[in-house]
Image (tube, rainbow over all chains, first blue to last red; front, top):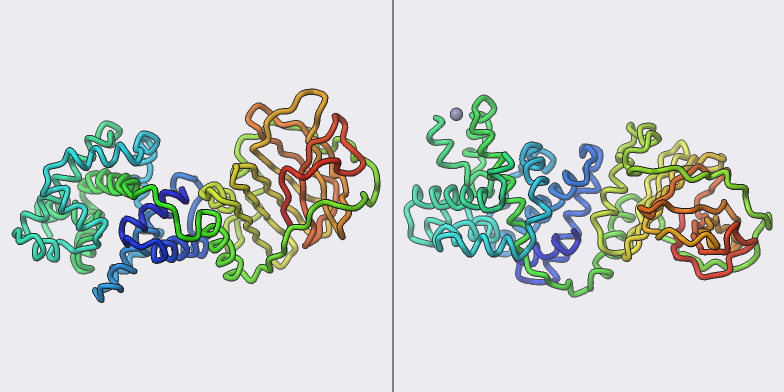
Length: 158
Length: 250
Ligand SMILES: [Zn+2]
């Protein structure tokens, strides 16, 4: 999980030392809010990855002088139902499998999801950057994720 | 927002690509709408996306990064860090404790009933195990409360771990450990407390097929005591005869 956490931060920040900082901050966040986390390794894993993502996006936005990610409380940011679903498929979702599923998406959907998740862009920033209308961007994000939901096996688990 | 408008935004919502105002409106809406199920499914997808990061090595290495994190957590808790001393010297009582710590099957230490005693702690004891298990590097985490209760968790990079729950100064401690392959009948694992460079036997134990063991020890642990595990001939030795397989300090 440490490797996965670092890989995510590195993917977002593209810089090893900034990624280390993000991972360290996320572990500290997790440690400090431990009291509000109810057990379960799956839940802690998901929370950690959510925190790593948040810290990495925060750092990216700070670097690019954009606004901080909206302050959703981390323990609320992890949806219990989502964690339960994810746990059913997590073992099958290797790095390779996730990339394979991403590759099979229509290019514009894949690009929009990457800009949002790894680039920390809002839907209007994505619209600006890609020149696509806002409604189209929303559609690409949703349709792309719906397709991944099926490819990841989450739909079948639901 | 109406259902249709919310539905259009579920993807952007789980990806964190909305404004705070939009987030609030969506959360208000889905509290009473079955779109929550779609959102849960898509949120699970984003958890999968987290695995798309490259297999990259941190500049400090994984061990270095792990040490940085452990140090940051200790600093956050004001828990002093001590180097772990190797086991040397002679045993204080010179005798091997009886097998008070009888083997018993163990499921997961996180669900041990003793954990419940710590439910009121600022930090849930169960998390120490969960946190340690997340790490691929050596990690030692410790939680203390003013009443002298202590939970110490130590995990080595190779996966061996030990967890000690104790009331300091009282003969009241439970040790759980994992990652220790079952030994042939001619050999036993031996658990030691290390105090002032002397190793005190806490007993011998055999692990189950899952590599785990848990038991109560009849010894009053103090802060600063070391805990170590060696492999010895069956029945145990008066003093450690080999380098510890694992050692950590409370
Ligand atoms: Zn609705």
